[in-house]
Length: 260
Length: 260
Image (cartoon, each protein chain N blue to C red):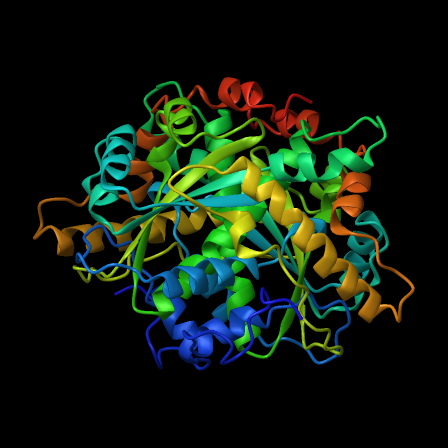
């Protein structure tokens, strides 16, 4: 197994948190037990404690528990059954609407910049940081998660269905529940592919892909009983040639984001 | 103190991870002790274990330890002294360059979409998720961090100085080191301001701001010995009326991002 999957005791430095982070896997099969209100509050509360740019806290999260609504969102996300099957489906939204509404009474007609690309990035990053803290919190409680980028497939329909106002967009979904599967962690790129020293090393980052290609071929072969062994770079080529979600720019500008 | 700062034992649900996440503060003063190579590897390795969209792992991180370079970046980030003073300054970059270079030999002349807004969002989110995992890992080792969005103030100069190629942009910096201060956590928005049920509740999210305004006024008054008590919404109005980093769209498109 790759050195880039952390296992307890494998590194000279370890503790319970590192070990939890190192065991992360995406869970796509859930037991029917509900997530309690206390658990949900602890998870979202932990999300809120993540860093936020200038304290803007530019995100909202919609906890979807209505079965019919979960089924609709599952269909809109590309028929991912686990979206309907998980007890709680979280929709993480970048949200500049609350900020603008809060600011309004104090503006005295001043120009504002909620439609800048910078503020779009701030809201998007704030949302991702909160979501990742929530993911870690959930896993610390024995729950499993999977991020659902497919929620952007039919993003206008999702926004409409959830009643999202201007300046709010669904960044991703997150299934939450007790895992009913225990896949092993997937190897990551070798550390030197992503960690540079004092300057970006373009040659080294590309050179490391060769190593990872062979790691991932072995991993796939092992997981599929020899049926698959496509190297990572070949999978990425297919991925990069896919014209996916080309509606994003128009949708976001329509919602009031990144017009400048 | 607000109920939205988690303290051990305060909720019915708690564990060591929730407690760690609940204690997060941004650290802006560091002791001179270095961060070891083993610590850095454990921290970035934990970052890598975060979820990544279709396994693209579209990020790089540059560990800056050269004093002169840290000082330059500190100046470019708006003279934030702690950028120069922390032993390691991490520059987290969204990176589609490695992906494109890895894919190239397999493309056979196919069109690719690395310049789509969707792929820009994927790279940005991948970077943020990895960074937040790294932040949690660092704090679990007794280190402190602060995110540096100011790194986007002079983003072209930063990119030039770090040798960033096309399709790589510095999303934010992160100071890393042993804390030499112990500020208390800042209260967050009340949970009902950010957590919606099955549908976005625009009225409720704005209504909750009133509560938070009073929480934050109290908090500021307490922290400044009564000198300051500006409500959050008034601070946000000033923030929203600031024409900050309006160069982002042009810079990103110049780097090959979000052209479509």
